[in-house]
Length: 104
Image 1 (cartoon, one colour):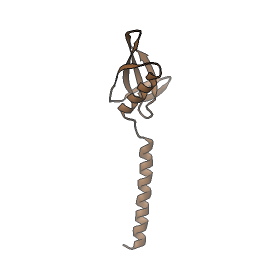
Image 2: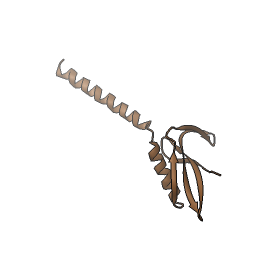
Image 3: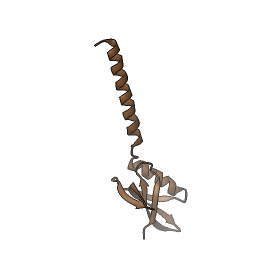
């Protein structure tokens, strides 16, 4: 193989690898732990949290006519000595909290 063919092959290989990397980064999911951390930071803006949890397997939910892949989790907060529990859904791709439901 001549050096020109080797250089062209290396260039094509590099370009293909770069394009594949860009495509994978666009479809990367956030980890459940990172989604929980984001949700806790959001809840902490409105008061302290005494506990939290998250399911590791994403679920499909519908909110306002849109379908999302989301992690389901929850937090416990104390108000005037009483614990209140909230469930939330966090988007798999961004980690943003999509919905919050107060558990009864």
